[in-house]
Length: 190
Image (tube, rainbow, N blue to C red; front, side):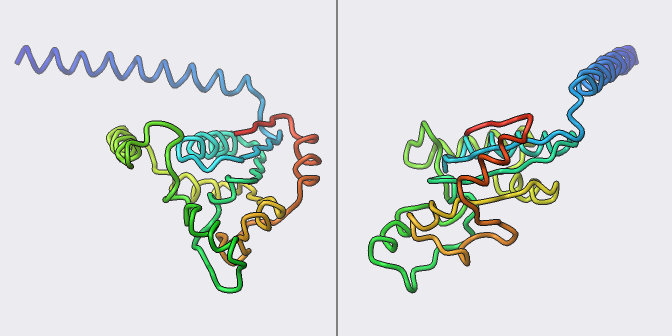
């Protein structure tokens, strides 16, 4: 009986500490005054871990009331692909299409690849810690109305067709990013 009482008391103390921690975080978040602000995030990497960071930050900002616009350029355009098409492409664009990851789930880590074991280990650790996979972060961003745009010159350079992209993506030029980032209170490049 004494052991049960000790466990109950320990749980009560942990719950109180957790409540205090949440209250402290809520107080800190309210100080940020982010509601109504905007953020521009330029993503030019197709590395799994960097895309995780980009979408995690975008989702956090969007959940705090920030209007978030993500721009994907160069290698980052891969994050918005749903499939790879070859028909109607030049031979060089077919080669690019073959070499680039076919979608967000096929991206690789920036470091510690070890023939794919690094990514598998990272995903295992993420699962054990109840962290969502990259594809879920992308869907969450869409659910939170994060605006997704892709650099049109990058699409042309890699021979990626609009039909290869996920639904709801805008195709824009560099000037659009510059205008948006100039109006934003937060601008990140990942």
